[in-house]
Length: 329
Image (tube, rainbow, N blue to C red; front, side):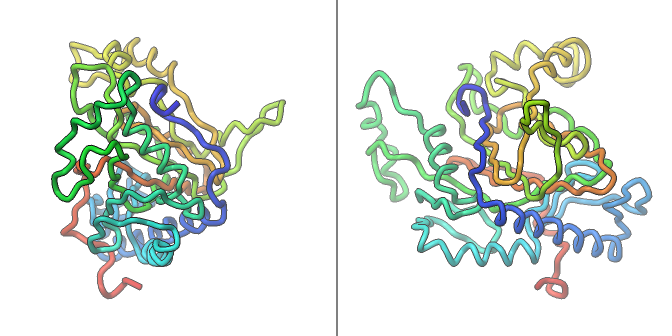
């Protein structure tokens, strides 16, 4: 499903208590960061229209738009990472590269463990590796010609799964009042001569808090109607699908008109509960939905997984920190 449609949902995969702990850490670190920025820089993240100054991107946090932030580091998250790191040996986590600080990505060929919350969950890693490393269905010998895999201490052309670069667990926090995101893809296609090459960048999403919800007449969970979620444009990780929505006379291929209406008719919003996981090819078009609730903060946990050779140039500012030595714990 991940390769065919661009996303898949795995129900009840994760330990719910662990998800809630990580979600709580995201909220706690955001609250502390918001208080620091309000006092230090007169930046009001909770009331952006009344803020004296505009927020910037920081080493620990990047703004996605008003009332929606991407938080990748903070004292509470760091504590959970240090606790998780103690289990690497028992989980057989094979770390090829692990550079400080603690929030840096690592490269691993590990099979993972079902005891992991999300970052090293064995099922998540197995699906990701198989999607990124498809096998030749016509010949079993082509892999033997990949001599470049001897480079840099590699295994050589043995047909093994290539190592993954796995980012730290972070959280997208949507505050009450946040609007629908613009439709976007997180990464471009590497080449444009084929409809769909194998994925090189896959994200895992999981809820970090109970957000309530609505059930239909048959008792099926349909998600929350107020705190939002993430919508995916079905099959839009393929160039043949997205090319038909391109507008030649527009600076953006996703602006207005009948093309956008047709595209939104293909949008799917997975109905998630705590413990569920969404995996998606980062070439797929998607957008965060509005949080119209009065008081519910929605932490969405994420882990970025790429081929080891791929680097994602996200808009972080590693020179500007929120948490200094005086407020780190």
